Amino acid sequence: MGRYYLSKLGQALITIVLVVLVVFTLLRFMPTTGYFSKEEYKEMTEVERNAYLRSIGVLDPTLVQLKNFVVKLFQGDLGRSITVYPKSPITEILADKVKYTVLLNIFSLILSYAAGLSLGVAMARYKGRLVDHLGTVYVVAIRSIPSIIILFFVQVGLSKLLDLPMMFYIDRPSSWILPVLSLSFSSIAGTAIWLRRYIVDEENRDYIKFARAKGLSQNYIMVRHVFRNAIVPIAINFPSDILLLISGGLITESLYSVPGMGGLLIQSIRALDNNLVQVLVLIFSTLSVFGVFLGDIFVSFVDPRIKLTADPQ
Amino acid sequence: MREKIFEARDLEIQFNLRGRVLTAVRKASIELYSNETLAIVGESGSGKSVFTKSFLGMLDKNGYISGGSLLFEGQDLAQLKTEKEWLQIRGKKIAMVFQDPMTSLNPVKTIGEQIREVITWHFGTDKEEAAKEAVRLLGMVGIDNPEARYKQYPHEFSGGMRQRVVIATAIACRPKILICDEPTTALDVTVQAQILQLIRQLQKELGMSVVYITHDLGVVANVADRVSVMYAGQIIEYGLVHEIFKDPQHPYTKALLESLPQLSGRDRALHSIKGSPPNLYHEIKGDAFAPRNPHAMKIDFELEPPFFRVSETH
Image (cartoon, rainbow over all chains, first blue to last red):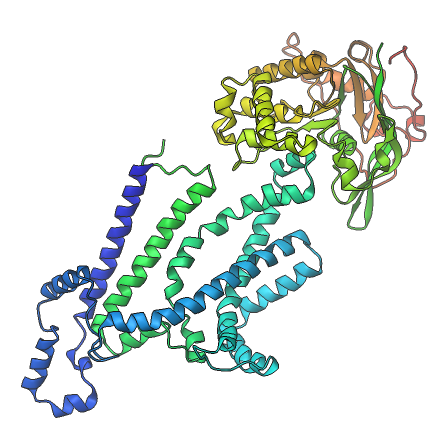
């Protein structure tokens, strides 16, 4: 068991290193003109430009740059942004942005699971009846209408209807409601439809029939057997969801002008901000890879049939 | 003397299937005496499972008892409506074991927990006490080292062992009646014999009546005191096991016995019953088996044959 975790951990680390290496190397092939604004580029002489590039370290051989990046990383220094927020330390930029995104996403995560699980249970419980049909309409609508249209209607329509602010203000709690809702719609639909399906599957199992023959009540069976088993495949995503709290919703955050993480990666790629790109890639890939890894471990605790061993018998 | 503890009288069960009504059980009657073993035999679709499931109120949602009565402990179970009333009977006084032990246990709960919950549920026993009882039950059904096995999960057990666990669960409340729905079909032959032996031994120890549902006449001859033969939702013949085997009266029973493979008749073709059972959507006129009976008389197609008393018990 322990050996299995170690080997999985090793694989996870190797994946991360590979991702970072590839991105790092590719970024070095980008033209250096991207490091200047138009005006700067025109004003500076060739010598000045080279001096500047050397000062920020992008003219060093790729391997040296990589070494510097890694060494600084372990000293807790993520480097400085080049073009997006010129000269600001990346740690500060992130610290500032992460808090909005994480707060919004925590609320959204709680709402998604609370609403998604309840809706899923209700749909399965009243299968083929009104609740089920309404739930299906909701899920199909969310899945088939482009999210940008839904989000737009939420922002414009709901804000009028409920008299809520259309923009995000950190100090006005009421302005948090719409962004949180917007972030949750699609995950509620996903959780609900999968849970419904797993519950319906479980209900038809022989051991549920036998549990009924044991004289246990419908409610008892529903909670202790059906739901308990149906939640396993949902639970595997839970660790990833928690770790990826810091990745913001691109569209939602820009619609409500949330100064969060959403869009930062795309922004920095377009601006050729090598330093920022590689730090973000490192962070996101680490979190995704570890999310999956923790999901595997988590599930092995929830489902005793899953025994994690390095060598299958 | 033998005491009648359960009786199904003229039971009729119908199903609603997309607006059509299917009569799965047509006026079937059985009597069950204390400490005896009754086998209900019949081919697939003859209604034997549906019939016995109704004893526990476990018909599917679209099925219902449309006539007759189920008399048990001075009560007519056919009249029970609510889940609450049924929970006093189901699993507690009448228990059931299903065909496939591989899928009868919840894979993510320990087997001990699955036995324990029945005891706690029906008697309100506290967990520790109930757990001790569960360990005792595991020992009773012949599982070695029950304390350690209590904490294991179903996938750590073989098919035969799982069926033992299932049986332990079923007898946890010391039921009066144990219904075994083809309990050995999914097991290999040596294990089958062990399980049948175990059920017989528990029956003696606990004083239960056992109902077997099976199409395996070998099992019937082995364990049953009395046999009811079911065809197209009807009990067409019943009697003591030797009466049915030696002196079958109904043509279907005869045909059934003839289709048993004989060790002696190696070069004879195996007898089979031609045709298939009648469509239960339609009302059946006359003897349900007549269309498949080579010796049927004209009257068999028109009138339902009456029951003949062959002996005191047949």
